[in-house]
Every structure is written in C-alpha cells, then in structure tokens.
Length: 171
Image 1: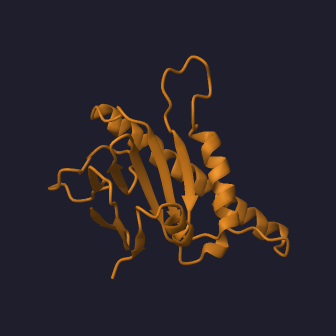
Image 2: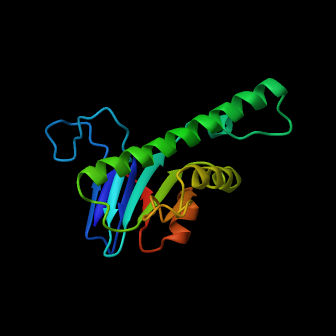
C-alpha cells in the first residue's frame, strides 16, 4: 500500500489500510472539521495502528542547542525544542480523541514521527515526548494505554528500523 504525504512516499507491505488523516479538503472522507490537531497519516495493521507525523524543517539547526551558542541563542533553541515537543504531543492526543470518537482505538497505537533532525536531537525529542504522551500505563488506575510506543526518526533511521515500511522523498 502506497501513501504520499508531506513530500514523502511511504510503502506499507502489511497494511490493512493507510491514508492521509490530516485532510484539509472538506469534500474528502477524512476531513474532520473539528478545531483539533491531527497526525499526517494513519496506518492500520493487523494488530495495531500507526499514527505518523511528518515534520521537515528548512533550518533544523534552529533546534540543535550547541555549547558554542550564546545564552540567548541557547534559550531560543530550547524554546523551539519545547514548542515542537508540545506540538507533537497534542497532534497525538487530538488524533487519539478523533479515533476514540470514531470507535477506532481497539488496537495498540504506535506513534512514529519522521523529522529531519540528527539522531541526537531525535533521541532528546523521543525521550521527552514519551514522558508526556505518556507511553504505557503510567498509573495503576488506567485500564488502557494511550500509546504503546513512540519513535522519533529521520529518513535514514526510519528505513533502517522499518524495512517493511520504506519511505523516500516523493518525486
């Protein structure tokens, strides 16, 4: 199954369904109309759902804090990182609410973010995002998990980690 979203072409060999979820066209089935955020794509597999968010920044260095940066620049980059983490968090949570309202939370959900950052920045983002979603069952009272897992990957690490779900720039 092939899906083109945000400048990338995805191939899902084992998908039952794969589609653009963040639909902007009111005439299309996946248009939501509610003032909430939505991930770019959803893939339904036999035993789980994938929520996929794609972010491509022209200047990824604006997010990478360096020891060479002055204090003001470091603070700006820290603010950019926190903004992105929160943005990705709410994309997931709002999508989960959409899918809950649609009766589509009957399988574990894996959140995959394809971001054009280096591995170090993706690792920081993944760690912080996992804590705030939260992944797993953070308290005893919860009967269900919101997210089974959360990954933040660049194109190279995506294709290495998910050989059955190859992605490349769309031509």
